[in-house]
Length: 629
Image (cartoon, rainbow, N blue to C red):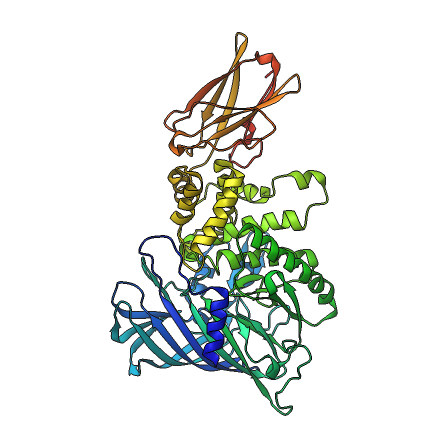
C-alpha cells in the first residue's frame, strides 16, 4: 500500500521522466528508506537506512562515498580549519573580538564540548547482505564494495547510524538563536553523486550541496509534544494531528503515548530535511495548482503579524515563479522557522526572522531555489552561480513586482541594480576570481557571495541585454522545461539561449564565467562638416554588442545598434517606439569603431551607450557624450 502511494504521487507529478535533451545523458538513482528515533533531551538520534542504488552509468563502480555532514561540527574539522584561515569568516560561526588596532575571530567549532559537537557514526554497513570495508575521512565515508556495481545494475545498502545534533552554528543544529529546538538538515548518511565527471565526494567546509535524485520513505519517532515540518508528504495525518489532519477527522493516536512516529514520503528529490519544536504554530493555505503551503513558526506574540502576513504573499510568489520559470511540480511546500538565516531544501526551506518585509524577502529567495536547485539541480560546488545567481535574478524580479518600491523613480529603476553595484565593488577591490572557481576555494567569503549571487544574477540580466528581454524570458522557460529533474551544466543554459535565438554565445559564457575580463566602452563625437563622427572604444577585455541612444536638441530621439560579429545575431529593437539603425557589425579584434550620424554636432544633445544600464560596464562615466563637450 505504501508503494502504491509513492507511485501515485510520482505519476501525478510526472516526476519519473529524465528529459535532459543531451544525447547519451544519464544520472544515478537512489531510493532511501529510513527509520529514525530522536531523543529531544540528549539531542541524540539513531536510525536504520536501506538504500537501493541504481548505476545508470556505463562505468563499473568498485567504491561509493557517503556524506557525513554532521562531522563538520567538531574541533579540528575542515570547516573549523577554514574558519581559522579565511580573513572574513562567516560571523555566525565565530566569536568576534575588536580592539582599536584590529579585529580577530575565534571559531565557535573549536570550543564545542563533547555533548555539543555534531557527529554521524555508521555501523553494520552491508551491500546486499555482505559486509563492506569503509573508513571515515572527515565528512566523507569511503566504502569499498563487497562486489562491483555493473552498468545498469542495482544494489541494496543497509546500515545503522547514530547521530548527535550539534549546537546551532551553521544551517543544522539545536536551539537556534530564535529558540527552535531542532533544525535537522544534512543529518543522515547521504550517498554522494556520481556523474559524467566522476564522484563528487566533496568535504563539507562551508558551501552547499549536490545530490542524487531519488525517492525517500522516512519514519521519524519523536516526543509527542513536538511538531515536524519538512520535506515530503505526511502519510499518517490523522495519526499525527498537529494541524495536518483532514478537516472533521479526529486524531487517532493513543492519549498516553509518549512519542509519535511521523511518516513522510518524498518522490524524486535529492535531499531530505526537517525541523521540529514543541511550540510550533502550524498554518496551511492553498496555493496555485492545489499546492499546499505550510508555515511552521514559533507560537509567540512577536511572530504573529509577520508570519501571518507572509502566507498570502508566499502564494503570490508561487504563482509568479510558475509564470516566469515553469510549474512547481510538487503539491507541497513548507516555510519553516529554523536554522541560522535562510537555506533551501527539497519541498521546504528553513528561515529566520519576524519582520514582514524581511520574511517576504528571504522566502522569495529560498522559494526560488526550488526551481533552480531542487528541480534544476546544477552542481553548486562547481557552479554555485547557476543556482544562487539565477535565484537572485528571479527574487529581484518578484520583489520588484510583488513588493514594488513606493518611490516612483525606484519603481522605474533597474530591479537588478543591487547586483550590479555589488559586482562593481568587487571589481574595484582587484581581488575578483572567476565564477568557475570551486565554491569553497574563493579567497574570501565576500568574493564567493558577490560572485555567486550578484555576478551570477547579472549573467541573466545582462543576457537579456545581449539577446533581448523577450528571448531571455523564452530561454529561462525552455531551460527549465528541458532540464528539470536533471543536473544541467553551464553549457546547457548557453545552448538553450542559442537554440532560442540562433545566436552564438560561447564567447559570453567563457568571458563572464571563466575569466575576470571586464566590460568598459567609451563614446566620443567629432564634427565632420554637416555630420557627426561617433567613435566607440573597447577599453575592457570583454566584447559586447552595443546599444546607443541619441537625444537631439529638437527633442527627437533615435537608437543605433552595433552587432558583435562573433554573435552572428541581431537582436530585436528593445526600444519599440524609437527608430533604430542597425549598423555594420564590430569584430572584437578592433579596439575602436566609427559610424556617422547625419546631423551636425551642435544638433546632438546627448549620446549614451546602454541607456537601460543592463550591460555591466565598469566605468559608466565614459558611456555618455553630452553636447557642447
